[in-house]
Length: 118
Image 1 (cartoon, rainbow, N blue to C red):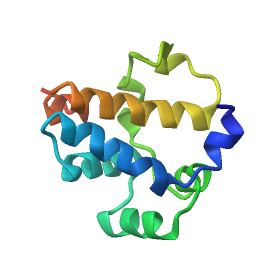
Image 2: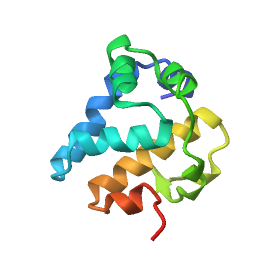
Image 3: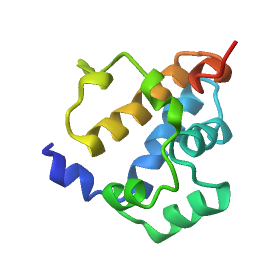
Image 4: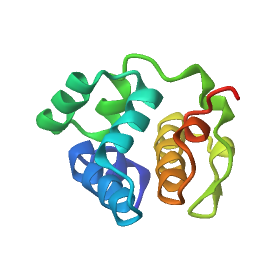
């Protein structure tokens, strides 16, 4: 899929895939929401509003209050691509979210996923 098609998809249409991936591994929708809020700065109410509005992914990230300052600590591979090396800023944000959801599904502790100091 080319980037522009992905960017124009409704975030609400990919959100259930994140939740399903987590729930298949005995994690919760609440944990998925916590990860999204951590990454984007949305409150729960604003996240739900974004989902209800069915804004596209580009708008979802453009309207995000503030990308978490610890986002630079997200490293690793998603779909064979190193997230820290993705050139397109929007695609990198998408890959960051993918990586965090992958970590959740793999059973990583929330403190580690959210890059909290030990």
